[in-house]
Image 1: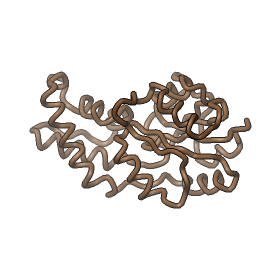
Image 2: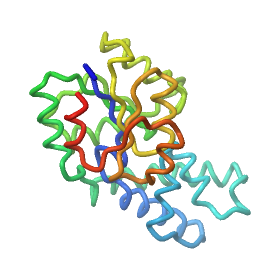
Image 3: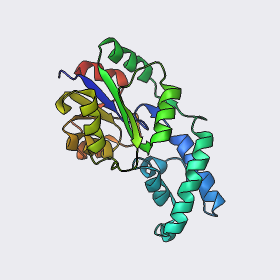
Image 4: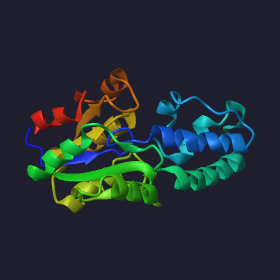
Length: 217
């Protein structure tokens, strides 16, 4: 398909971050007197930024309490800052895929709804041996995915047309972002959401293993 660049989501695509996110949020919930959640619901709590994670994890009667949500968000950032590297790691096959993309001189970038400070430090920690043209998380003044603004910024900074980008992600948010930006949406099945959600939100193809991307280049 003559892709010249790949734009990756981070959580659920490059890195398995679910346990550390769940542990951090559950610690905050207990601190505020609420019950913790098992791991599985966090597959649906994450993906739209930390504020959305707090909203979804709080008990329904408290989800519209803005003062509580703000306090929980601040506590979550503090807690996650201490434990983001406890169990997080690249998914199997990701290092080998990045090696092959580098050999083929395919430009690579990362776009996450995770706060920018966490996005950058995690890429530096877990993926240090590969060059990424742009690494962006949630930043003030830039709308979160699925708004395409940050994806379009990455294309502009990379000097590569949007139609030459493959966009890999594991959630409907990623597929909607790719479509809105004019990039080619590819859903990955090793992440947080099932195939049906990805195809329903615009995925043009699905990958079961990272190496399958190479056949599309």
